[in-house]
Image 1 (cartoon, rainbow, N blue to C red):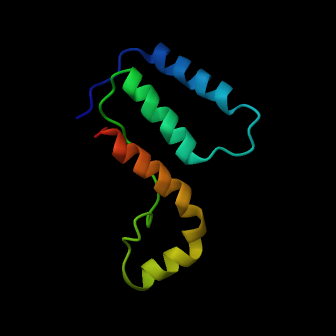
Image 2: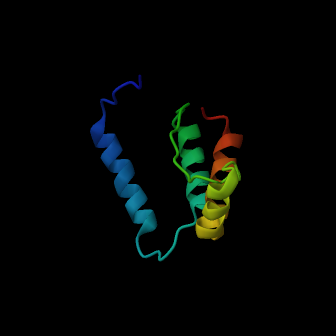
Length: 93
């Protein structure tokens, strides 16, 4: 079970800083965002991160559904894959 965070104001401040970073951008590659998150978690001494990517980033979906998945969203997966690799390499669990 995850511990309940007590400092919701700190969470709001992080959200505002992230919003300022994103303001005016038409596109943010998830890899760049993942690297920023990894850096921030390191500075804050956070050891755990939940990051949701996408089904199929490791080409792990077998059979006809895997083929269909690649056809439908395969072109969108590389940024998710890069983000996952950055997070995996960080040592976060």
